[in-house]
Length: 414
Image (cartoon, rainbow, N blue to C red; front, side, top):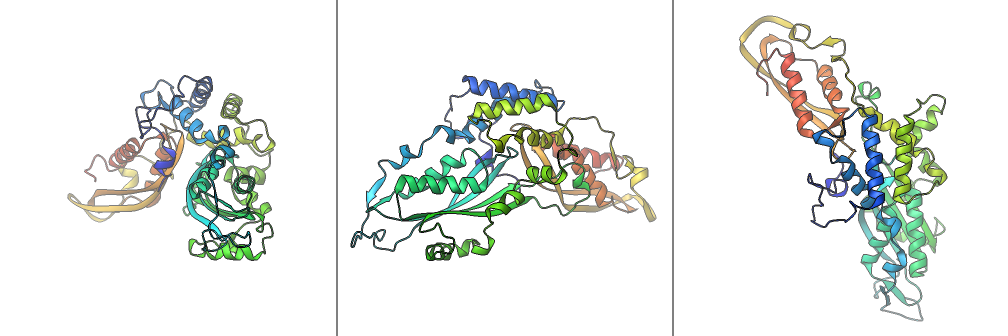
C-alpha cells in the first residue's frame, strides 16, 4: 500500500484539485518562492526541470505544501466562538452532556500532518474527549476542525497532542480535555540498506496522549473512563509512549542522525539545504530549534532518488540469458513453463508530487523448459534499481518488464 491518495495527492495531472476549487495560490509570491526552491531540488537530483513528467512538479508541490500547512493562518477562536451551547441536563450547575453522562468523546478523526524533522507527511487518527463545565458544550464538528488547525502545520506527535489539548481547554473552558493520537510515519529505507533487509517494516507507529484539568494526572479516574471507550481501537494505557521515548522512536531521519552523529553523516548539497530552508520560511515557520536540522534531513533522504547513470548489474550478474538462466537437465526451447515471483517489495518517489509511495510487485514470465527460473534476489534487485528514482507507476512497471524480458533473451513473458 502507498500513502492515502485522498490525503496526499491534492492535485490532478492538470494541476487542479479534484473538487474543482481553485486554491488561488499560483500567483502569490510565497507559492512562486516555493516553486523556485523545488526546481533547485530537482536540479540537485540531476533532473531536467523542463522534462515533460516533472514540468508541473514545482507548482504541484508548492500548492500541496501550502494547503497542507494552512493551519498557520487559522485561529481557534474563529471556530469555537459562536459554537458554544447551553448544556442540557444541568443539575446543581453540574453538566451531564445531554443527560447521557459527563464525558463527551469524538473518536477516529482521520487527519494528516507533516513531520517537522523530515518534512514527510504522516497519518493521524485523533480521539478527543472533554468534561463540560460552565454550563456549556461545543458542537462536535468543531473538535475535528480545531484538531485539524494544528495538524495542518509542521508537527511532532506529542506537540500536536499538546497543542490540540491546550487550544480546546482555552476555547471551551471545560473541566478537562483528553487527546490521544495514533500516528503512522513511513519508514523509507535507503538504497544501501534495502538490499540487506528483506523484512524492512514500512511504517513506524506511535501512540501519544495529552490531558488537562481532570485529565492532567495520567492516573485519574477520568482517564479510565476515556480509555475504556477506546479499548476496541487498540488504545490501552500501556501502549502510550512517554514524552521522552516518543521523540527517540518517531522520525527515522531524526533517529538516524542521532545514532550516527554529525561526524559520520555526509554533508548534503548546500544549495538544496538552502532551498528547503526557504520553503520553511514561505510556509510560515521561523527558525525554532526543532527545525534546524530539518533541511539536512530532507535533502539526505531525497538524494536516495538521485538520477545517476549506474551500470546495470545486480548481485554480480550482468544482464544476459547466459549468465542468469541455468539448465537443470534436458532443455527444450519449444516448451515454455510459467514462473512467478509474488510480493516483491518496492519503494519509490512520485515525480509529480515528490512524495513517497511503496507497495509490492508481482512478476510472471515464460521460461524454456529445463531451465532454472530467475533467482528471486535478482528480480528483487531489478525492482529496487528502478524504484529508487523519481517515478510513476506506469513507467516503473514497463522498465521492470523490459529488463526481465531482456534477461530471457526476448522470450515471451507475462
